[in-house]
Length: 264
Image (cartoon, one colour):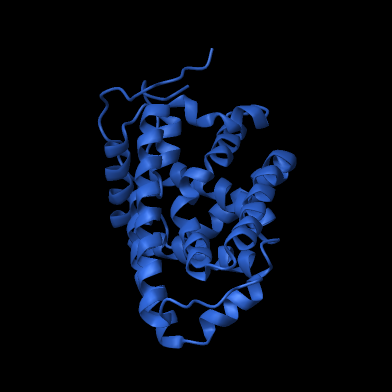
């Protein structure tokens, strides 16, 4: 019977590994293999990611700062949103048949810790949304242009290069901080009975121990997500599952796992 944990047991932070600079490309390859092994389950999550993008444009087209904040802030929430994809890869690693229903409730395996970390990501997203609103107000005033589609939204941003540089710069700093805190945190809490603070510390240690390799991984993620968005979100149907599966393999390479604290 599957073990479900409200919290985490008292375990020491796992050791982190040193990886090669270009390991990100091996993770992408592993992500592609996992998607091929579970195309329907993976495709379901990809479709959800794409639909969320269309929903953001459809509902908040008259609030471009919010569309931009949600689209860029998506990267802040992605480590939690991809938890179902981590579970699919975990099952494939174990030689099990992935089940969509099981992946959709994967958070229950350590729901206390994962829930607290999700709240941290939620606060980071809200903080970025407020910063986004302030930047739009400073550069464009209170009368913001309406955006009816993705193309118009991109054109509006490109019209003001100074705003774009400032926006991308501050957004990059926020994303780098969250990336360092979350690169292995949720896969670790899914896989082991680890509390969110220990998971966060482990993630930061893994990042500091592999600065260049994880910089390559971060740039790869941003570039692929940008392609997915630029294709009117259609590319996300394939790109997001690949990145989600790849993130599981990143965790497996970065964190030395094993022992009695596995959340099995």
